[in-house]
Image 1 (cartoon, each protein chain N blue to C red):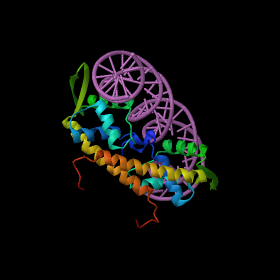
Image 2 (cartoon, chains in turn green, cyan, brown, yellow):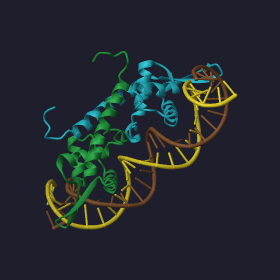
Image 3 (cartoon, rainbow over the protein chains, first blue to last red):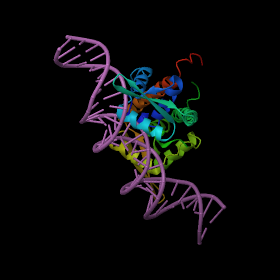
Image 4 (tube, rainbow over the protein chains, first blue to last red):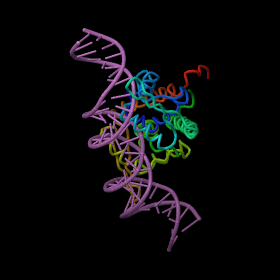
Length: 113
Length: 113
DNA sequence: CAAATATACATAGATATACGATGCATTTAG
DNA sequence: CTAAATGCATCGTATATCTATGTATATTTG
């Protein structure tokens, strides 16, 4: 597991990308997908996920549709057009940030490799 | 400028790497080095930097030495042995984290490039 | 069949970390 | 002479995540 702080600012981007890739997903499914794709290195807690989803919904990035599975309710989330635009912007920002960090960490003397 | 949250968890790692690369540095010098190396994309504020430096000092990652420049005081920070070990651990964690995020963002269908 | 685990949603409070605003003081540039 | 840059520092605020807790159903294991 990574330091908690490292994940900050990336959770929304992760969710947007998963939904783009897989179409609509429900909360628990998102936690499992992140766990699998990160081989257990990133575990999204319910206390992080649901507030994040609710905020994204309030911001118009996601839409919801509910389904009854037996007696349980599943809340599916899907990207809105605004969410798709946000996805592109956040991916650009994230990869740019990674590159910038790399350039800061790279010592000046290390010209090769 | 990036979202504030993206920087969280990386500031200490950035400082450790700069000190490793350049030897002892003082606060203002660090803000300028980050600004230059990031071509203005990351601006470390005094309100972020000094508390971070003080915490690293309290954690034994840094040592200090003061110098009088005219009537002004400069506080130089340098890596301790503990700081050097922390640097290695944090670099490993950070790059591993970046790789993990990349693998999460990469769609399953996108096998090539 | 009972118990443990997994599935599924949700919220309240704690924590960590960076930022904005502000303050003080010296030095350099226009 | 004035503005900007240099140089340190702290206080309050904002934000996002986690822990702990709560409720409930479904499935697996012993």
